[in-house]
Amino acid sequence: MSTASQKWSVKLAAWHNSGLSLAAWCRENSVSYHSAIHWRRRLAVVNRPEQGVFVELALPSAQPISLECNGVLVHVTKGFDPGLLADVLYVLKEG
Image (cartoon, rainbow, N blue to C red; front, side, top):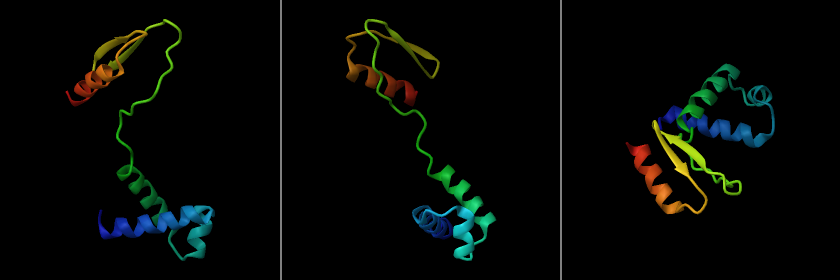
C-alpha cells in the first residue's frame, strides 16, 4: 500500500469512528470532501473481499440442490460429505 493510501486509510478510519457524515468530518478536519470520496472508493476496491465466499446453507428436507462453479454443475443431496464438496469446489475455483 502506498504512503498516500495508508494516509487516507487512517483518515477514513477516523471519519468512520467519528460517527459524523463524511461531509461534516471533512469540514471539521479541513479535508477536501471530493478527495475523501475519491479515496473511499479507491480503497474500497483494494479492500474488497475475494469473490467466491462459502456460505452455510440449510438443505430443505430431502430436496437436492445444484451448484454451478466455473461452468460445472454440482448436484448435492442430503447426506453429502461436506469435506469432499469443499475439495471439489476448491479444485473448480482454482481451475
